[in-house]
Amino acid sequence: MNSNLKDELKAAGKRMTRTRRAVLNILETSKYPLSPTELYAMLQKDNVAIDLVTVYRNLTALKELGLVTQLELHQEGQFRYEIKEGREHHHHIRCKNCGRIVDLLLCPLKKLTALIEQETRFIVGDHSLEFSGWCPKCQ
Ligand SMILES: [Zn+2]
Ligand SMILES: [Zn+2]
Ligand SMILES: [Zn+2]
Image (cartoon, rainbow, N blue to C red):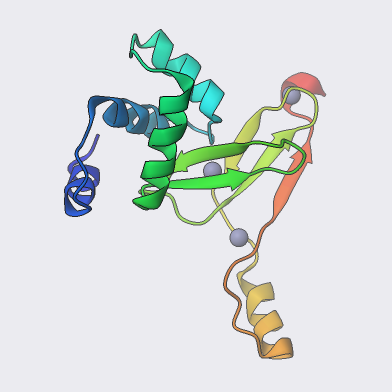
């Protein structure tokens, strides 16, 4: 884990537990947002002694600390988590067949946002945009 994250955790006055560190490490290296059950399976593979309830609890704590982002993809019915540090606002694409998710490290909506603000005089806070389709394996 990079030292920035550790500093942030310290600054937040939370004890850096071993499990929390393990959770962060996995999220840091993952290329797509993980569900608690996927994370749990990965922790078990790494021989981290943890139960699913503790995984949920850790994720909630990390979310409250502002270290991870929680997202819910359309028609999945579960939350996923990804590390916040080093990742700007972005979107996702999900395979309709196998459920594979890929980070789209871009946002094409800046112009549209400006237009909406102009038209409606709203100040746009956030937006959601999600793609789905068929991954190379499922085509
Ligand atoms: Zn697929
Ligand atoms: Zn993502
Ligand atoms: Zn966006």
